Image (cartoon, rainbow, N blue to C red; front, side):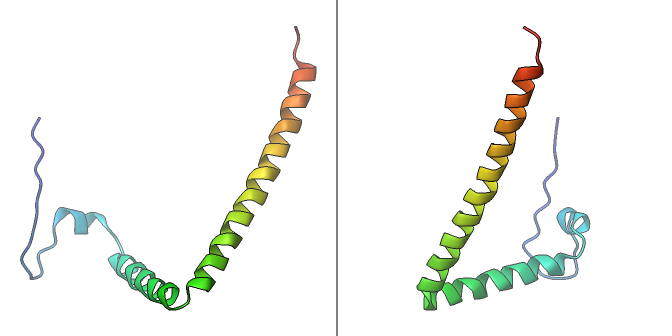
Length: 84
């Protein structure tokens, strides 16, 4: 088995196999630019980043906790209906 790898280090209008697979690559560039801007904002205001991290962890804990409660109730019901 031989796989071909095409690498283009030059400039120009050459569209390699990866660029042919990716549609709307401008979204990829936009997400990179937004990530860099977000990084600069967090470097300037680290307190805001810490607060955002606390909110993300709290939301994660609430969602996972609710899902675990639902799973526990479902397993409890499943255990009662199962035949020995």
